[in-house]
Length: 158
Image 1 (cartoon, rainbow, N blue to C red):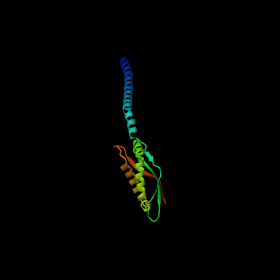
Image 2: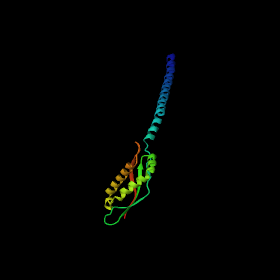
Image 3: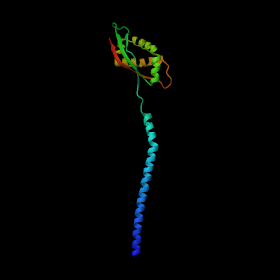
Image 4: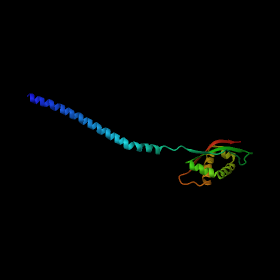
């Protein structure tokens, strides 16, 4: 009987040791899988985050324009500051090359307006659309480069 008890006692520590060995192997496997997943997925996540980050806007401020408006109940003039938003620095370079043409078209556009055309918010929005169209028509831009909009930085009618 003593031999049976001694055999059972010896078997109990062996089962307990196997249990801890199994837990250790399982823990190492989980850590290895997690580490491998992080190693392979982290660079992709960083690249996707960089690709998804929007580029900062590029603005092109022009010197202020002062023009006589088309006659309507007396003489009036318009003083306006215009800032264009463009896709990248290449468009800025193109605009610099075409600046005399751009300024001419903008001056002609502004001087054709009556004070009543520009008094309302809708009139100003229409003017902004026309300013964008005038610049787009005045210079060639390759695919992917664009004039995205125009902003009025100052606006005075007298």
